[in-house]
Length: 118
Image 1 (tube, rainbow, N blue to C red):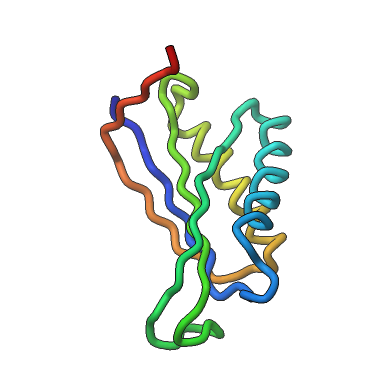
Image 2: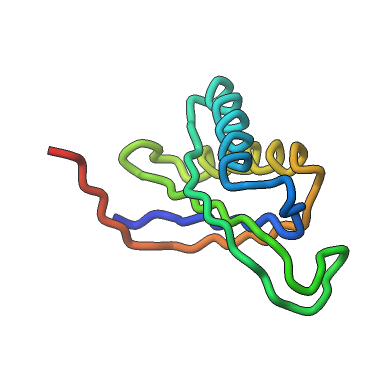
């Protein structure tokens, strides 16, 4: 099925404080609040990575980043715009709770097969 994949990277977070568990908790609390308002839960798969690049903003040359991958399942949420609005609301709340770090967003059209447990 044709759908979208959303990848948001939060860059330059304090490695002495932030962990995958903390980011997951922040994402879940935000997604649950938006779900109450919209009926759309924006799930996320979280990965910790290390960025090596030129110094950008206040992020050091080598810095920790967290990538959250979300996919819209058309069988659950048909309307792309409704999902986008819910997704944006979750990301804005998460970013606020992370004290406004630098972010990179990638949106890809993908062809995905989704298999239910039998």
